[in-house]
Image 1 (cartoon, chains in turn yellow, orange):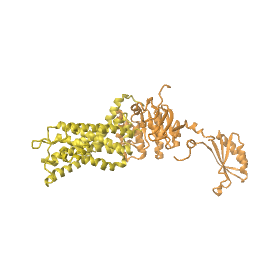
Image 2: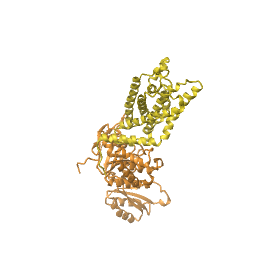
Image 3: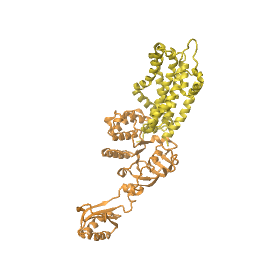
Image 4: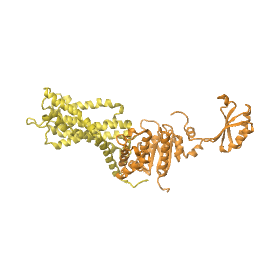
Length: 272
Length: 333
Protein backbone atom coordinates (compact mmCIF):
# COMPACT_ATOMS: atom_id res chain seq x y z
CA UNK A 1 0.00 0.00 0.00
CA UNK A 2 3.05 2.23 0.04
CA UNK A 3 2.93 4.75 -2.81
CA UNK A 4 5.91 6.30 -4.48
CA UNK A 5 6.88 9.31 -2.38
CA UNK A 6 9.55 11.91 -2.04
CA UNK A 7 12.29 11.14 0.43
CA UNK A 8 13.86 14.58 0.13
CA UNK A 9 13.70 15.82 3.73
CA UNK A 10 13.98 19.47 2.73
CA UNK A 11 11.07 19.19 0.32
CA UNK A 12 8.99 17.29 2.88
CA UNK A 13 9.60 19.92 5.55
CA UNK A 14 8.93 22.86 3.22
CA UNK A 15 5.73 21.23 2.00
CA UNK A 16 4.53 20.49 5.54
CA UNK A 17 5.26 24.10 6.53
CA UNK A 18 3.26 25.40 3.58
CA UNK A 19 0.31 23.07 4.24
CA UNK A 20 0.25 24.05 7.92
CA UNK A 21 0.18 27.74 7.01
CA UNK A 22 -2.60 27.07 4.52
CA UNK A 23 -4.60 25.33 7.25
CA UNK A 24 -4.32 28.39 9.50
CA UNK A 25 -5.34 30.72 6.67
CA UNK A 26 -8.37 28.57 5.80
CA UNK A 27 -9.52 28.58 9.44
CA UNK A 28 -8.98 32.35 9.77
CA UNK A 29 -10.77 33.15 6.52
CA UNK A 30 -13.78 31.30 7.89
CA UNK A 31 -13.83 33.41 11.05
CA UNK A 32 -12.75 36.65 9.38
CA UNK A 33 -15.73 38.72 10.64
CA UNK A 34 -15.06 37.74 14.28
CA UNK A 35 -11.37 38.41 13.82
CA UNK A 36 -11.94 41.89 12.42
CA UNK A 37 -14.48 42.84 15.06
CA UNK A 38 -12.11 41.64 17.77
CA UNK A 39 -9.22 43.57 16.24
CA UNK A 40 -11.14 46.81 15.66
CA UNK A 41 -13.50 47.34 18.61
CA UNK A 42 -10.92 48.54 21.12
CA UNK A 43 -8.93 50.88 18.80
CA UNK A 44 -12.15 52.40 17.45
CA UNK A 45 -13.31 53.31 20.95
CA UNK A 46 -9.89 54.67 21.83
CA UNK A 47 -9.90 56.92 18.80
CA UNK A 48 -13.47 57.99 19.39
CA UNK A 49 -12.95 58.95 23.05
CA UNK A 50 -9.41 60.34 22.96
CA UNK A 51 -9.37 61.99 19.54
CA UNK A 52 -12.96 63.16 19.15
CA UNK A 53 -14.81 63.35 22.45
CA UNK A 54 -12.01 64.65 24.72
CA UNK A 55 -10.79 67.40 22.30
CA UNK A 56 -14.40 68.48 21.75
CA UNK A 57 -14.95 69.05 25.48
CA UNK A 58 -11.57 70.71 25.84
CA UNK A 59 -9.77 67.96 27.77
CA UNK A 60 -7.25 67.10 25.03
CA UNK A 61 -5.46 69.01 22.32
CA UNK A 62 -6.83 68.82 18.80
CA UNK A 63 -3.65 67.45 17.31
CA UNK A 64 -3.47 64.59 19.85
CA UNK A 65 -5.07 62.32 17.23
CA UNK A 66 -1.96 62.51 15.06
CA UNK A 67 0.23 61.37 18.00
CA UNK A 68 -2.14 58.73 19.30
CA UNK A 69 -2.98 56.98 16.03
CA UNK A 70 0.52 55.46 15.53
CA UNK A 71 0.46 54.29 19.15
CA UNK A 72 -2.93 52.65 18.66
CA UNK A 73 -1.73 50.94 15.46
CA UNK A 74 1.33 49.59 17.27
CA UNK A 75 -0.64 48.46 20.31
CA UNK A 76 -3.38 46.76 18.27
CA UNK A 77 -0.87 45.04 16.05
CA UNK A 78 1.24 43.73 18.91
CA UNK A 79 -1.77 42.54 20.87
CA UNK A 80 -3.36 40.85 17.84
CA UNK A 81 -0.08 39.06 17.08
CA UNK A 82 0.37 37.98 20.70
CA UNK A 83 -3.21 36.76 20.95
CA UNK A 84 -2.93 34.96 17.60
CA UNK A 85 -0.31 32.63 19.01
CA UNK A 86 -0.46 32.70 22.82
CA UNK A 87 -3.96 31.44 23.55
CA UNK A 88 -3.94 28.65 20.95
CA UNK A 89 -0.54 27.49 22.22
CA UNK A 90 -1.47 27.55 25.90
CA UNK A 91 -4.59 25.48 25.24
CA UNK A 92 -2.93 23.13 22.77
CA UNK A 93 0.11 22.38 24.89
CA UNK A 94 -2.04 22.23 28.01
CA UNK A 95 -4.73 19.75 27.04
CA UNK A 96 -6.29 20.10 23.57
CA UNK A 97 -3.29 18.53 21.79
CA UNK A 98 -4.73 19.41 18.39
CA UNK A 99 -1.22 20.43 17.45
CA UNK A 100 -0.11 16.75 17.62
CA UNK A 101 -1.11 16.22 14.02
CA UNK A 102 1.31 18.93 12.92
CA UNK A 103 4.04 17.72 15.26
CA UNK A 104 3.78 14.33 13.52
CA UNK A 105 4.04 15.94 10.09
CA UNK A 106 7.43 15.39 8.42
CA UNK A 107 9.10 18.63 9.54
CA UNK A 108 11.41 19.62 12.39
CA UNK A 109 9.67 20.64 15.61
CA UNK A 110 11.10 24.19 15.50
CA UNK A 111 9.47 24.69 12.10
CA UNK A 112 6.04 24.03 13.65
CA UNK A 113 6.77 26.91 16.03
CA UNK A 114 8.09 29.07 13.18
CA UNK A 115 4.84 28.60 11.26
CA UNK A 116 2.87 29.73 14.31
CA UNK A 117 5.07 32.83 14.54
CA UNK A 118 4.67 33.68 10.85
CA UNK A 119 0.92 33.20 10.97
CA UNK A 120 0.44 35.26 14.15
CA UNK A 121 2.62 38.02 12.68
CA UNK A 122 0.34 38.08 9.63
CA UNK A 123 -2.71 38.39 11.87
CA UNK A 124 -1.04 41.29 13.65
CA UNK A 125 -0.19 43.03 10.38
CA UNK A 126 -3.76 42.73 9.12
CA UNK A 127 -5.14 44.01 12.44
CA UNK A 128 -2.74 46.99 12.28
CA UNK A 129 -3.50 47.74 8.64
CA UNK A 130 -7.31 47.74 8.95
CA UNK A 131 -7.07 50.50 11.55
CA UNK A 132 -6.17 53.03 8.87
CA UNK A 133 -9.52 53.00 7.02
CA UNK A 134 -11.36 52.65 10.34
CA UNK A 135 -9.50 55.66 11.77
CA UNK A 136 -10.16 57.68 8.65
CA UNK A 137 -13.87 56.98 9.10
CA UNK A 138 -13.96 57.76 12.86
CA UNK A 139 -11.65 60.79 12.87
CA UNK A 140 -12.86 62.54 9.75
CA UNK A 141 -11.00 65.85 9.39
CA UNK A 142 -8.72 65.04 12.33
CA UNK A 143 -7.23 62.05 10.44
CA UNK A 144 -3.60 63.01 9.70
CA UNK A 145 -0.96 60.60 8.37
CA UNK A 146 2.02 61.71 6.31
CA UNK A 147 2.26 59.98 2.93
CA UNK A 148 5.95 60.35 2.12
CA UNK A 149 7.28 57.58 4.40
CA UNK A 150 5.04 54.76 3.18
CA UNK A 151 8.01 52.39 2.75
CA UNK A 152 9.08 52.92 6.38
CA UNK A 153 5.46 52.47 7.45
CA UNK A 154 5.15 49.09 5.71
CA UNK A 155 8.49 47.98 7.13
CA UNK A 156 7.42 49.00 10.64
CA UNK A 157 4.11 47.14 10.36
CA UNK A 158 5.92 43.98 9.27
CA UNK A 159 8.55 44.25 12.00
CA UNK A 160 6.03 45.02 14.75
CA UNK A 161 3.95 42.00 13.71
CA UNK A 162 6.93 39.66 14.03
CA UNK A 163 8.06 41.21 17.32
CA UNK A 164 4.55 40.68 18.71
CA UNK A 165 4.28 37.07 17.61
CA UNK A 166 7.77 36.36 18.96
CA UNK A 167 6.68 37.67 22.37
CA UNK A 168 3.48 35.60 22.03
CA UNK A 169 5.48 32.44 21.35
CA UNK A 170 7.43 32.89 24.58
CA UNK A 171 4.31 33.61 26.64
CA UNK A 172 2.39 30.75 25.01
CA UNK A 173 5.05 28.16 25.76
CA UNK A 174 5.74 29.33 29.31
CA UNK A 175 2.22 29.95 30.65
CA UNK A 176 0.08 27.01 31.85
CA UNK A 177 -3.68 26.93 31.11
CA UNK A 178 -4.55 27.67 34.76
CA UNK A 179 -2.42 30.84 34.62
CA UNK A 180 -4.19 32.47 31.67
CA UNK A 181 -6.05 35.13 33.64
CA UNK A 182 -2.93 35.89 35.67
CA UNK A 183 -1.04 36.34 32.40
CA UNK A 184 -3.43 39.04 31.23
CA UNK A 185 -2.96 41.16 34.33
CA UNK A 186 0.71 40.49 35.05
CA UNK A 187 2.20 40.49 31.55
CA UNK A 188 -0.17 42.28 29.21
CA UNK A 189 -1.25 45.19 31.43
CA UNK A 190 2.28 46.58 32.02
CA UNK A 191 3.02 46.04 28.33
CA UNK A 192 -0.07 48.07 27.52
CA UNK A 193 0.69 51.10 29.68
CA UNK A 194 4.47 51.46 29.51
CA UNK A 195 4.69 51.16 25.71
CA UNK A 196 4.52 54.86 24.69
CA UNK A 197 1.15 54.21 23.11
CA UNK A 198 -0.63 57.24 24.55
CA UNK A 199 2.35 59.59 24.80
CA UNK A 200 5.46 60.20 22.65
CA UNK A 201 8.72 59.06 24.23
CA UNK A 202 10.44 62.46 23.91
CA UNK A 203 7.70 64.08 26.00
CA UNK A 204 8.74 61.95 28.97
CA UNK A 205 12.11 63.71 29.40
CA UNK A 206 10.80 65.47 32.50
CA UNK A 207 10.02 62.09 34.11
CA UNK A 208 13.36 60.47 33.50
CA UNK A 209 12.80 57.24 35.48
CA UNK A 210 9.61 56.46 33.58
CA UNK A 211 11.28 57.28 30.29
CA UNK A 212 13.91 54.66 31.12
CA UNK A 213 11.25 52.13 32.11
CA UNK A 214 9.54 52.45 28.74
CA UNK A 215 12.76 51.50 26.96
CA UNK A 216 12.35 47.93 28.28
CA UNK A 217 9.02 47.57 26.47
CA UNK A 218 9.19 46.46 22.80
CA UNK A 219 5.92 48.28 22.18
CA UNK A 220 7.76 51.59 22.79
CA UNK A 221 9.93 50.97 19.74
CA UNK A 222 6.99 49.87 17.58
CA UNK A 223 4.98 52.95 18.55
CA UNK A 224 7.91 55.36 18.07
CA UNK A 225 8.87 53.84 14.72
CA UNK A 226 5.27 54.19 13.55
CA UNK A 227 5.23 57.82 14.77
CA UNK A 228 8.31 58.48 12.67
CA UNK A 229 6.53 57.04 9.64
CA UNK A 230 3.09 58.55 10.25
CA UNK A 231 3.04 61.89 12.15
CA UNK A 232 2.92 64.81 9.70
CA UNK A 233 5.04 67.91 10.12
CA UNK A 234 3.38 70.46 12.39
CA UNK A 235 4.17 74.17 12.03
CA UNK A 236 7.19 73.21 9.92
CA UNK A 237 8.59 70.86 12.59
CA UNK A 238 9.12 67.13 12.25
CA UNK A 239 8.13 65.34 15.41
CA UNK A 240 11.01 64.09 17.56
CA UNK A 241 10.96 60.29 17.98
CA UNK A 242 13.38 57.65 19.17
CA UNK A 243 16.11 57.41 16.50
CA UNK A 244 15.13 54.88 13.84
CA UNK A 245 18.33 52.78 14.14
CA UNK A 246 17.47 52.20 17.82
CA UNK A 247 13.94 51.24 16.87
CA UNK A 248 15.06 48.75 14.24
CA UNK A 249 17.77 47.19 16.38
CA UNK A 250 15.50 46.90 19.43
CA UNK A 251 12.69 45.21 17.48
CA UNK A 252 15.12 42.89 15.65
CA UNK A 253 16.75 41.90 18.95
CA UNK A 254 13.32 41.33 20.54
CA UNK A 255 12.35 39.04 17.68
CA UNK A 256 15.65 37.13 17.69
CA UNK A 257 15.69 36.59 21.46
CA UNK A 258 12.02 35.63 21.64
CA UNK A 259 12.24 33.27 18.67
CA UNK A 260 15.39 31.61 19.98
CA UNK A 261 14.07 31.21 23.51
CA UNK A 262 10.50 30.44 22.41
CA UNK A 263 11.41 27.62 20.02
CA UNK A 264 13.51 26.06 22.77
CA UNK A 265 10.71 26.15 25.31
CA UNK A 266 8.30 24.95 22.63
CA UNK A 267 10.54 21.99 21.91
CA UNK A 268 10.87 21.15 25.58
CA UNK A 269 7.07 21.18 25.90
CA UNK A 270 6.49 18.75 23.01
CA UNK A 271 9.59 16.54 23.08
CA UNK A 272 10.61 15.09 26.44
CA UNK B 1 13.41 -11.57 2.62
CA UNK B 2 15.81 -11.82 5.52
CA UNK B 3 17.64 -8.64 4.54
CA UNK B 4 14.59 -6.42 4.84
CA UNK B 5 14.83 -4.13 7.85
CA UNK B 6 12.47 -4.83 10.71
CA UNK B 7 9.39 -2.57 10.82
CA UNK B 8 10.29 -1.66 14.40
CA UNK B 9 13.68 -2.35 15.95
CA UNK B 10 14.36 -1.39 19.56
CA UNK B 11 17.78 -2.09 21.12
CA UNK B 12 18.69 -1.64 24.81
CA UNK B 13 16.40 1.36 25.02
CA UNK B 14 16.66 3.40 28.21
CA UNK B 15 14.71 6.54 29.06
CA UNK B 16 15.15 8.47 32.27
CA UNK B 17 13.16 11.69 32.51
CA UNK B 18 14.76 14.79 33.97
CA UNK B 19 14.16 15.07 37.72
CA UNK B 20 13.44 11.34 38.02
CA UNK B 21 15.66 8.84 39.78
CA UNK B 22 14.31 5.74 38.05
CA UNK B 23 14.34 4.70 34.42
CA UNK B 24 10.87 4.92 32.86
CA UNK B 25 12.15 2.48 30.22
CA UNK B 26 14.95 0.33 31.51
CA UNK B 27 16.80 -1.57 28.80
CA UNK B 28 14.08 -2.67 26.41
CA UNK B 29 14.85 -4.73 23.29
CA UNK B 30 12.37 -6.06 20.78
CA UNK B 31 11.68 -6.10 17.09
CA UNK B 32 8.53 -6.25 15.02
CA UNK B 33 8.51 -7.76 11.54
CA UNK B 34 6.79 -6.00 8.65
CA UNK B 35 3.13 -7.07 8.54
CA UNK B 36 2.93 -8.12 12.19
CA UNK B 37 0.39 -7.02 14.80
CA UNK B 38 2.40 -6.62 17.97
CA UNK B 39 0.80 -6.01 21.35
CA UNK B 40 2.42 -4.07 24.17
CA UNK B 41 0.73 -4.89 27.46
CA UNK B 42 1.42 -3.72 30.95
CA UNK B 43 -0.07 -2.00 33.97
CA UNK B 44 -0.24 1.78 34.16
CA UNK B 45 3.25 3.24 34.51
CA UNK B 46 4.93 0.16 33.03
CA UNK B 47 6.73 2.23 30.37
CA UNK B 48 4.51 1.47 27.35
CA UNK B 49 3.69 5.09 26.60
CA UNK B 50 7.32 6.16 26.92
CA UNK B 51 8.44 3.34 24.61
CA UNK B 52 5.90 4.40 22.01
CA UNK B 53 6.87 8.04 22.59
CA UNK B 54 10.42 7.21 21.53
CA UNK B 55 9.17 5.39 18.44
CA UNK B 56 6.97 8.31 17.36
CA UNK B 57 9.78 10.87 18.00
CA UNK B 58 8.08 12.67 20.90
CA UNK B 59 10.46 11.25 23.51
CA UNK B 60 14.26 11.37 23.18
CA UNK B 61 16.01 8.17 24.26
CA UNK B 62 18.56 8.44 27.09
CA UNK B 63 20.53 5.56 25.61
CA UNK B 64 20.05 2.65 23.24
CA UNK B 65 18.43 2.95 19.85
CA UNK B 66 15.14 2.63 18.05
CA UNK B 67 14.44 2.46 14.33
CA UNK B 68 11.37 2.40 12.10
CA UNK B 69 11.79 0.68 8.72
CA UNK B 70 15.54 0.98 9.19
CA UNK B 71 15.44 4.73 9.94
CA UNK B 72 16.83 5.82 13.30
CA UNK B 73 14.21 7.77 15.28
CA UNK B 74 16.74 10.18 16.80
CA UNK B 75 18.82 10.61 13.63
CA UNK B 76 16.07 10.93 11.04
CA UNK B 77 12.83 12.01 12.72
CA UNK B 78 11.46 13.49 9.48
CA UNK B 79 11.91 10.22 7.62
CA UNK B 80 10.36 8.33 10.53
CA UNK B 81 7.35 10.66 10.73
CA UNK B 82 6.67 10.06 7.05
CA UNK B 83 6.37 6.32 7.67
CA UNK B 84 4.36 6.17 10.86
CA UNK B 85 0.86 7.10 11.96
CA UNK B 86 -0.47 7.42 15.48
CA UNK B 87 -3.98 6.92 16.83
CA UNK B 88 -3.92 8.27 20.39
CA UNK B 89 -6.13 7.25 23.26
CA UNK B 90 -7.83 10.61 23.55
CA UNK B 91 -9.12 12.63 20.64
CA UNK B 92 -6.69 15.21 19.30
CA UNK B 93 -8.77 15.95 16.21
CA UNK B 94 -8.46 19.45 14.78
CA UNK B 95 -11.76 20.97 15.89
CA UNK B 96 -11.39 24.07 13.73
CA UNK B 97 -11.74 21.97 10.58
CA UNK B 98 -14.64 20.01 9.14
CA UNK B 99 -14.39 16.23 9.20
CA UNK B 100 -13.30 15.77 5.62
CA UNK B 101 -10.77 18.59 5.88
CA UNK B 102 -9.14 16.90 8.85
CA UNK B 103 -8.24 14.08 6.48
CA UNK B 104 -7.23 16.18 3.48
CA UNK B 105 -5.08 18.56 5.52
CA UNK B 106 -3.38 15.67 7.28
CA UNK B 107 -2.48 14.24 3.88
CA UNK B 108 -1.34 17.67 2.71
CA UNK B 109 1.05 17.93 5.68
CA UNK B 110 2.54 14.66 4.45
CA UNK B 111 2.89 15.78 0.85
CA UNK B 112 0.13 13.63 -0.67
CA UNK B 113 -0.86 15.24 -4.00
CA UNK B 114 -4.18 17.11 -4.16
CA UNK B 115 -6.23 14.75 -6.32
CA UNK B 116 -4.98 11.68 -4.47
CA UNK B 117 -5.87 13.06 -1.03
CA UNK B 118 -9.36 14.05 -2.13
CA UNK B 119 -10.04 10.55 -3.46
CA UNK B 120 -8.52 8.80 -0.49
CA UNK B 121 -10.47 10.92 2.01
CA UNK B 122 -13.77 9.92 0.41
CA UNK B 123 -12.76 6.27 0.18
CA UNK B 124 -11.62 6.07 3.81
CA UNK B 125 -14.67 7.92 5.16
CA UNK B 126 -16.89 5.41 3.36
CA UNK B 127 -14.79 2.49 4.52
CA UNK B 128 -15.02 3.56 8.14
CA UNK B 129 -18.73 4.23 7.97
CA UNK B 130 -18.50 8.03 8.15
CA UNK B 131 -19.38 8.80 4.51
CA UNK B 132 -22.69 10.51 5.29
CA UNK B 133 -21.24 12.71 8.07
CA UNK B 134 -18.20 14.05 6.22
CA UNK B 135 -19.11 17.73 6.39
CA UNK B 136 -19.93 17.73 10.10
CA UNK B 137 -17.93 19.42 12.77
CA UNK B 138 -16.02 17.02 15.00
CA UNK B 139 -17.84 18.46 18.02
CA UNK B 140 -20.95 16.56 16.88
CA UNK B 141 -19.13 13.24 16.70
CA UNK B 142 -19.53 10.47 19.29
CA UNK B 143 -16.51 8.80 20.89
CA UNK B 144 -16.71 5.85 18.51
CA UNK B 145 -16.95 8.09 15.46
CA UNK B 146 -13.99 10.19 16.61
CA UNK B 147 -11.98 7.02 17.05
CA UNK B 148 -12.83 5.85 13.53
CA UNK B 149 -12.04 9.30 12.16
CA UNK B 150 -8.62 9.22 13.83
CA UNK B 151 -7.95 5.85 12.20
CA UNK B 152 -9.01 7.24 8.82
CA UNK B 153 -6.71 10.21 9.39
CA UNK B 154 -3.83 7.92 10.27
CA UNK B 155 -4.24 6.01 7.00
CA UNK B 156 -4.35 9.12 4.78
CA UNK B 157 -0.62 9.19 4.13
CA UNK B 158 -0.32 5.40 3.70
CA UNK B 159 2.06 4.75 6.60
CA UNK B 160 4.12 1.61 6.99
CA UNK B 161 3.66 1.35 10.74
CA UNK B 162 0.52 2.21 12.70
CA UNK B 163 0.56 2.90 16.45
CA UNK B 164 -2.74 2.28 18.21
CA UNK B 165 -2.93 3.35 21.85
CA UNK B 166 -5.81 1.49 23.51
CA UNK B 167 -7.89 1.71 20.34
CA UNK B 168 -11.18 0.37 21.72
CA UNK B 169 -11.05 1.83 25.22
CA UNK B 170 -14.49 3.28 26.09
CA UNK B 171 -16.17 2.04 22.91
CA UNK B 172 -19.49 0.23 22.71
CA UNK B 173 -19.35 -3.47 21.68
CA UNK B 174 -20.48 -2.73 18.10
CA UNK B 175 -17.73 -0.17 17.56
CA UNK B 176 -15.20 -2.49 19.12
CA UNK B 177 -16.06 -5.41 16.83
CA UNK B 178 -16.07 -3.08 13.82
CA UNK B 179 -12.63 -1.74 14.72
CA UNK B 180 -11.22 -5.21 15.27
CA UNK B 181 -12.38 -6.18 11.78
CA UNK B 182 -10.83 -3.03 10.32
CA UNK B 183 -7.55 -3.61 12.14
CA UNK B 184 -7.33 -7.18 10.82
CA UNK B 185 -8.18 -6.02 7.30
CA UNK B 186 -5.51 -3.32 7.38
CA UNK B 187 -2.99 -5.80 8.63
CA UNK B 188 -3.84 -8.23 5.85
CA UNK B 189 -2.96 -5.44 3.40
CA UNK B 190 0.54 -5.41 4.85
CA UNK B 191 0.34 -2.67 7.48
CA UNK B 192 2.49 -3.27 10.56
CA UNK B 193 0.60 -2.46 13.75
CA UNK B 194 1.79 -1.88 17.29
CA UNK B 195 -1.03 -1.66 19.78
CA UNK B 196 -1.23 -1.13 23.50
CA UNK B 197 -4.26 -2.28 25.44
CA UNK B 198 -5.58 -3.23 28.85
CA UNK B 199 -8.18 -5.44 27.20
CA UNK B 200 -6.77 -8.95 27.26
CA UNK B 201 -9.35 -10.36 24.88
CA UNK B 202 -8.38 -7.65 22.42
CA UNK B 203 -4.72 -8.60 22.59
CA UNK B 204 -5.65 -12.28 22.33
CA UNK B 205 -7.86 -11.65 19.28
CA UNK B 206 -5.58 -9.36 17.33
CA UNK B 207 -1.94 -9.74 18.22
CA UNK B 208 0.45 -12.21 16.65
CA UNK B 209 2.93 -11.56 19.41
CA UNK B 210 2.55 -9.90 22.77
CA UNK B 211 5.13 -8.30 25.01
CA UNK B 212 4.24 -7.79 28.66
CA UNK B 213 6.00 -4.81 30.24
CA UNK B 214 6.35 -3.86 33.88
CA UNK B 215 8.60 -1.38 35.66
CA UNK B 216 10.27 -0.32 32.42
CA UNK B 217 11.25 -3.82 31.33
CA UNK B 218 9.82 -6.42 28.98
CA UNK B 219 9.02 -9.52 31.05
CA UNK B 220 7.97 -11.84 28.22
CA UNK B 221 7.54 -11.55 24.47
CA UNK B 222 5.78 -14.37 22.64
CA UNK B 223 2.55 -15.57 21.04
CA UNK B 224 -0.57 -15.64 23.16
CA UNK B 225 -0.60 -19.48 23.17
CA UNK B 226 3.01 -19.66 24.36
CA UNK B 227 2.39 -17.06 27.07
CA UNK B 228 -0.47 -19.12 28.47
CA UNK B 229 1.89 -22.06 28.92
CA UNK B 230 3.85 -19.93 31.39
CA UNK B 231 1.29 -20.54 34.10
CA UNK B 232 2.25 -23.73 35.93
CA UNK B 233 -0.58 -26.29 35.75
CA UNK B 234 -2.66 -23.73 33.95
CA UNK B 235 -4.80 -26.39 32.32
CA UNK B 236 -7.45 -27.90 34.57
CA UNK B 237 -10.77 -29.76 34.68
CA UNK B 238 -13.37 -28.48 37.10
CA UNK B 239 -16.05 -30.88 38.36
CA UNK B 240 -19.10 -30.06 40.47
CA UNK B 241 -20.29 -33.18 42.18
CA UNK B 242 -23.28 -33.88 44.42
CA UNK B 243 -22.33 -36.46 47.01
CA UNK B 244 -24.66 -39.30 48.10
CA UNK B 245 -23.31 -38.96 51.66
CA UNK B 246 -20.84 -36.56 53.30
CA UNK B 247 -18.25 -39.27 53.91
CA UNK B 248 -18.03 -40.29 50.22
CA UNK B 249 -16.17 -37.04 49.52
CA UNK B 250 -12.85 -38.43 50.71
CA UNK B 251 -13.31 -41.57 48.62
CA UNK B 252 -13.92 -39.55 45.43
CA UNK B 253 -10.90 -37.34 46.14
CA UNK B 254 -8.70 -40.43 46.40
CA UNK B 255 -10.12 -41.88 43.17
CA UNK B 256 -9.50 -38.64 41.26
CA UNK B 257 -5.93 -38.37 42.57
CA UNK B 258 -5.31 -41.90 41.32
CA UNK B 259 -6.20 -41.08 37.69
CA UNK B 260 -3.34 -41.24 35.18
CA UNK B 261 -1.86 -37.84 34.24
CA UNK B 262 -3.31 -35.89 37.17
CA UNK B 263 -0.74 -33.58 38.75
CA UNK B 264 -2.84 -32.29 41.63
CA UNK B 265 -6.45 -32.21 42.82
CA UNK B 266 -7.91 -29.34 44.85
CA UNK B 267 -11.21 -29.38 46.66
CA UNK B 268 -12.47 -25.80 46.18
CA UNK B 269 -14.05 -23.96 49.10
CA UNK B 270 -13.30 -26.97 51.30
CA UNK B 271 -14.64 -26.37 54.80
CA UNK B 272 -16.76 -23.39 53.81
CA UNK B 273 -20.46 -23.55 54.81
CA UNK B 274 -22.82 -24.23 51.87
CA UNK B 275 -24.28 -21.13 50.20
CA UNK B 276 -27.82 -22.56 50.19
CA UNK B 277 -29.79 -25.75 50.92
CA UNK B 278 -29.45 -26.76 47.31
CA UNK B 279 -25.68 -26.61 47.67
CA UNK B 280 -25.75 -29.11 50.52
CA UNK B 281 -23.50 -32.02 49.66
CA UNK B 282 -22.16 -30.36 46.51
CA UNK B 283 -18.39 -30.22 46.16
CA UNK B 284 -16.16 -28.74 43.44
CA UNK B 285 -12.90 -30.44 42.51
CA UNK B 286 -10.20 -28.98 40.30
CA UNK B 287 -7.87 -31.44 38.56
CA UNK B 288 -4.62 -29.99 37.19
CA UNK B 289 -2.96 -31.82 34.32
CA UNK B 290 -0.80 -31.24 31.26
CA UNK B 291 -3.59 -32.58 29.04
CA UNK B 292 -6.71 -31.68 30.96
CA UNK B 293 -9.27 -32.51 28.22
CA UNK B 294 -8.15 -36.16 28.31
CA UNK B 295 -9.38 -36.39 31.92
CA UNK B 296 -13.03 -35.61 31.16
CA UNK B 297 -13.98 -39.30 30.58
CA UNK B 298 -12.00 -40.97 33.40
CA UNK B 299 -12.97 -38.32 35.96
CA UNK B 300 -16.70 -38.65 35.18
CA UNK B 301 -16.41 -42.41 35.44
CA UNK B 302 -14.67 -42.22 38.82
CA UNK B 303 -17.41 -39.99 40.22
CA UNK B 304 -20.23 -42.21 38.94
CA UNK B 305 -18.53 -45.34 40.32
CA UNK B 306 -18.59 -43.76 43.77
CA UNK B 307 -22.36 -43.37 43.45
CA UNK B 308 -22.24 -39.56 43.11
CA UNK B 309 -23.71 -37.33 40.42
CA UNK B 310 -21.89 -34.86 38.14
CA UNK B 311 -23.64 -31.49 38.24
CA UNK B 312 -21.24 -29.60 35.99
CA UNK B 313 -17.94 -30.20 34.26
CA UNK B 314 -15.68 -27.93 32.22
CA UNK B 315 -12.11 -27.65 31.01
CA UNK B 316 -10.51 -24.48 32.29
CA UNK B 317 -8.08 -22.71 29.92
CA UNK B 318 -5.79 -20.05 31.34
CA UNK B 319 -6.68 -16.62 29.95
CA UNK B 320 -4.24 -13.94 28.94
CA UNK B 321 -5.52 -12.11 31.98
CA UNK B 322 -4.29 -14.95 34.21
CA UNK B 323 -0.88 -14.64 32.54
CA UNK B 324 -0.88 -10.87 33.00
CA UNK B 325 -1.73 -11.09 36.71
CA UNK B 326 0.71 -13.98 37.17
CA UNK B 327 3.53 -11.84 35.69
CA UNK B 328 2.74 -8.40 37.09
CA UNK B 329 0.99 -9.17 40.38
CA UNK B 330 -2.36 -8.11 41.81
CA UNK B 331 -1.47 -4.89 43.57
CA UNK B 332 -2.92 -1.59 42.37
CA UNK B 333 -0.76 0.90 40.51
